[in-house]
Length: 109
Image (cartoon, rainbow, N blue to C red):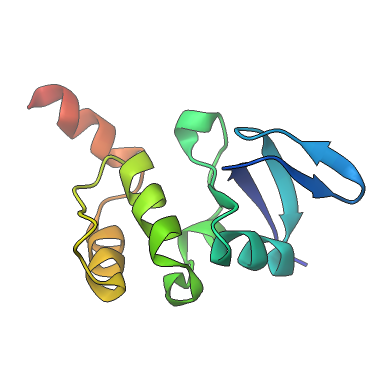
């Protein structure tokens, strides 16, 4: 069973234990989809100290909410705007280099 590391956007109880906003939690794929869809979490990035696994990079973003997509794109340093559609935001995310690759480009700008 796949598991994902998420960064919580608000305090939430998982398996009877309360986790604060900003906490990193490892959850099942079903829980991850639920939290991401409801905007309760974003995928943890390398900046959060998490090594991305291959299965995390092949994410189906269509099930995410627009606010979750916006937050995720912003944490990756991608240029997105509130006025963009979900499809446009997904296109920007999928077209961007891997999270570790775009950091070097920013430093050289």
